[in-house]
Image (cartoon, rainbow, N blue to C red; front, side):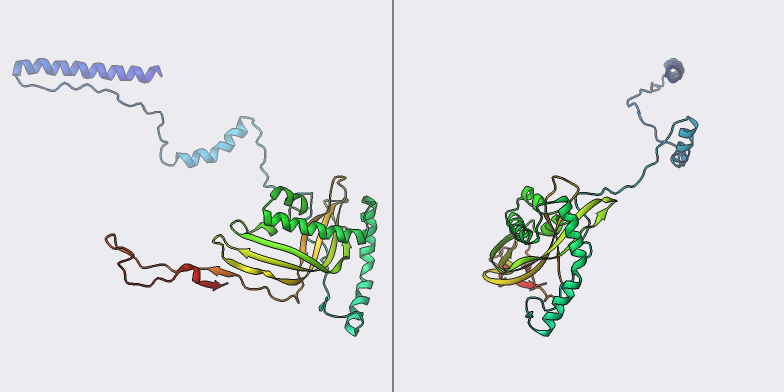
Length: 315
């Protein structure tokens, strides 16, 4: 810091002496000579590096750190995992085609019934594992409990009660239920159960280790419900509140068996390939009006602009 100040003072001294000499000469020659003394008006705290030095510094920085004896930890790109629930449905149940329409007394209904009995061996083994961690588990009582969880979860969804919804659905099911519902109004109502709910499949998958077990139980529900979804403008997008529909659903409930404080939560839904297509979603589209100049008014333009509320578009 002292060396630059010394150089600056030397330059000022030389310039001052030269200007005084010129001033004396001007007195003799009677020609005025301007006296100029450089003054530092702004201090530069940052001096930009030379061209090409930045890339060289970045290349040599790791070598300098190693030469200094500093140990640099290696950075790993890790993805966080959640062990409170699994990432999907293990060995998903395949619903028989024509379920809830075929009678068990018919030929095709008897075939479906015998096939279900053959595939129930794995479910019985999984139920034994579940009972080993949950002694109060019973298939008949659990089906009714699962229906209550399903109703409470959908009521919490219509009320946007996030805290209660997190306690009723898993972390994998929560984004699937709430995605796209931020600016919508949902009216859902459970009217009655057409058939008593029943457990159709049970599985016990593990994750990370063999001792970390999860219980997944698939419950068949045949009920009557009403659903109506309104957009942010209050216009009906899907369903109807007055006309109930018969709904056949295969719901998967999961519990972390190793966790003593774990509880059964809604984990997902199985949609069969033979299920009918969903109703189209009605969307409101606004038709832009005429372009006005700054001096024009909307009343002065002789155009019939259609109302945006009367225009509907099917997705």
